[in-house]
Length: 403
Image (cartoon, rainbow, N blue to C red; front, side, top):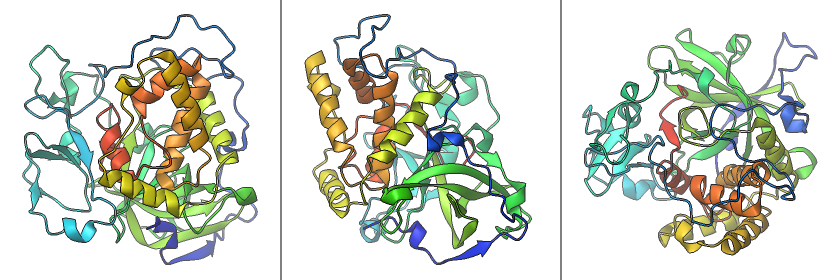
């Protein structure tokens, strides 16, 4: 039931060349941030950490609606496609399904892979092909078209992985993807190449992540913990895998005997993806505050997530919160749920929802942003549901680390 990747057989190694020197850490996990708010281009969220300021404009009283300029993948009939991965605990049953082929390249999509799917048209794209497609704005001919026809082409690279992106590791033998939240820049790490024992065809990359597993805790018994996490990347195919980690405050490198495949879920608050400006300082604060209130890993949360998935209750519906009062009440309920015993998907949801609470000018504005970008329940959402819901709202999945 629990996320298994830190339970894989591994060995602790002392790096011979480091001595007392530790791999560089980002300061924000310890609450030390820059005095300057770092942002990327996009519409600015009015900032008021305690909701006692006056924003530049009154928040809308209408429930948020999906924008037409976000990055979503559409099928040839203009339906928004959603990401599908193997569902938790159903790996054996899904192995019996007929083979799924990519409608574009005709390559088989296995249970190890993710796919963009349209149930209405019974069509699927693999992650490699979906990378090349975006939707046209509504009102025009709504068919998938090459990415370069809509936005300025950017060379795909792990260097484009941003703070706030989500790493999806797996699936494991139970069909479970383990989610980790990126909390520092992704960097090439040639120094790690030797002690990771990588083949010459591979590159070494690393970043700081925060996560939650059953058998591991962070400082002072917190459920969440951060690590410098190491990845391999195939130079020819761009395939990426989780290969090791360095625990905070130690020099013990944990190496996985079996590399774990990694996918990347890119958040939409980056330039050209349709979301508002991303406030790095507010996100760093959300990580710290969320970690401070975190509880131990929760089996009950995992069971609730499976039960919720079985009932088809995937996400919050903005139409159920049409007034400012209803949305403020929703934010209070969500804030209460953030202290529930987490699973790995809870980490992602709590930090992002806490972020909007800090970055917005009022509870109503925060609730609207949550309903727009991450309308999920932190104590009831499994990883497969998170991927399905968010990819319909502007989050983009890559089958590797090439953002």
